[in-house]
Length: 192
Image: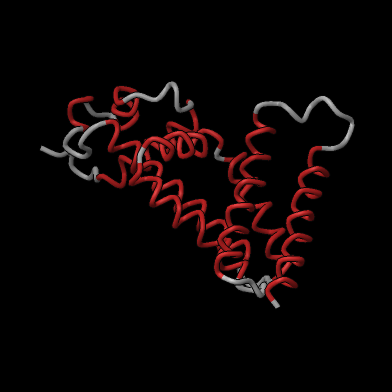
């Protein structure tokens, strides 16, 4: 019998909170059950198994990221929208470090989750690129390039690879985003 007042959504939100507090490597069904004040076996009344729960945690996180990005670019266009989107993506990855890396690791292993990620991660950049006069194939390349630049930067920064030089890391990030914008302008000219 399901614990009164406990829903699958509540279990997912509690799991997200726990993962962000304790880290994805420390997360377990037992730890989650303790957090919720129930027996571990009772969790299976709400979620099928650990893999299903983590997939739902990832979907929740991806929706959270998309929502943050869509809010950040609302009312902005062109270059400014690109900058706000890049900053929000990077901030989300830092502020929700454990959740972000769980999403990246899980999506790489689960095709269904990867399909969801493709849509949720792509919608904000697609919206931003609407302001640029790009052909569809060119737009796809620029969507991929945006993710490669911002995720790549986040990944390298996470690993400490940018700590050995005197240039400020934020300055390097802004430089990378500006290079992307400059390339977009060139792409726009090619498509005109």
